Length: 390
Ligand SMILES: *Cc1c(COP(=O)(O)O)cnc(C)c1O
Image (cartoon, rainbow, N blue to C red; front, top):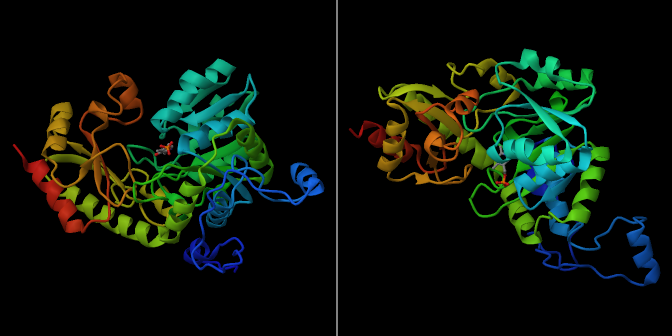
């Protein structure tokens, strides 16, 4: 079924049915697959036929999940991983050699930043950073050994937007592998390959699962690069479990309706926050006041489910706000059906110096809300009472 519509693709992309003609796709909980005879086994290992051998390599459930994500992102091929971070790590480990250099946005997921600063340097791979408002400086960071241009948009936790079209052009001009972590947008809201991305990475743990149940990751994009990433994964073992793949594939079937409501709720929450006197500013890509609103409109279908705002009164006010929240969860996850609030300066980013925090727009009173699917009136009521506590 070759539909142009993402809803249909997410629901009707299916591997072959078994002899049982099941309607819902079955779960293949098996670590390995059997061969007819010695010749079948030889040909399978020689990759003369495409078939499952061992679930560290491929499994019908992971293949189905990957083929759906490829359809939604418009990608040639892909590979699934146990977590978003194993997708990020495996992508770099498979493609980079000792002595290579990365140019990356400074506003990247915390563990990705640790990978760049603490682990990749062990293999003599260095990273230079640009700030989200310094896209014009990217070209000056590119060196003869630069191999990758890397970014996230929207960024975590400050929901800044980077112009993917501009980044894509720079990557093309300098022959760099352009990689986007598309976790906050999902393939429904934004398809980076259209803007020149060679690879797109997702933490499927977030909006793709969308229900806070399983971990997963996936990298999709150019087939030649995916081949290298697949071989790295096949030999080093960060495979997605068949069970999680089965869950994630089912979750994709409801991605569009969930994300539509997430975005509708998030916009209402953002508009409410703009009117509250205890809030000094609100950032949401589809608010007119967002500094990169025009870029967001150009490259995203809707604004996503994360809203950032600054509560007046700094670190203490941020802590007090968290302590006053009644319904929303205090949790490190995002993209769940349940609304989640975090205060990065006193929690996830508390180990950073004030200077480093400000580099990534993490101000003292910054609150990040992952707006869930509860009735938006309840979400707003909870935020309102927590903001008004003296
Ligand atoms: C959560 C997250 C990751 C890491 O994913 P895990 O599944 O937790 O390993 C990577 N990038 C972004 C933007 C994320 O939000």
